[in-house]
Every structure is written in C-alpha cells, then in structure tokens.
Length: 106
Image 1 (tube, helix red, strand yellow):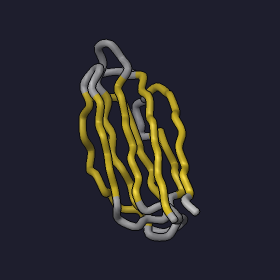
Image 2 (cartoon, rainbow, N blue to C red; image 1 turned 60 degrees about the vertical axis):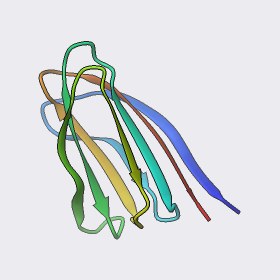
Image 3 (cartoon, helix red, strand yellow; image 1 turned 30 degrees about the vertical axis):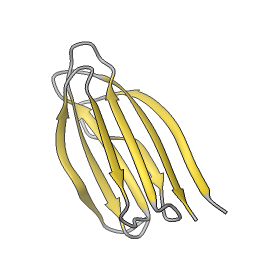
Image 4 (tube, rainbow, N blue to C red; image 1 turned 90 degrees about the vertical axis):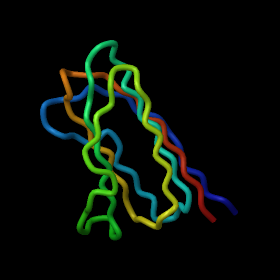
C-alpha cells in the first residue's frame, strides 16, 4: 500500500530564516517541493536542511539560493531522509510565498 503525503503552505518572509515547511519524510521515498515567490517585486532566499534522524543533526541539502519575484523553484529528492526543513528569509524585502509538496512511499 502506497503512502502519499501532500499539502500547501503560504507565508511571508522575515529578516531571519524561518521554516516555510517542516516535513517528516521518513516513510517517503520520492519527494517534491515547489516554492513560488508570489510577491510582485521582492526577492526571497531559501535553503533546504535535511536530517537523517528527525531531531538529529541537520545539514544543508541545498545552500542559500535567491528566488526573484514571481520565480519558482522545483526540488525533487529520492535520497532517504527522516525530515526536511525548507527555510526562507527576506531577499530584497518581505516577500510572500507558496510552498506545495508531495511525497510517496511504500
């Protein structure tokens, strides 16, 4: 039986990095995250932290990357992780964003 976990989240960036998505993925093999900067003029920064143990040591799977106004980032992972945390912060100002995610596993 396949397990599917999916959802969407919205928010606005701040000066400090904050979690846009904190996702338990231990039972999921394939994972897709789509981040859209929905702001009309401000950029945002994002990075993806990955954890082999949910409350363990996190490391950057994707380092700090800038997403311009209206741009979309698509992240696809097949590596086994216990937890993924997508963090965002201000680029050129407080930018609004949307995160869609889906994962599946046996």
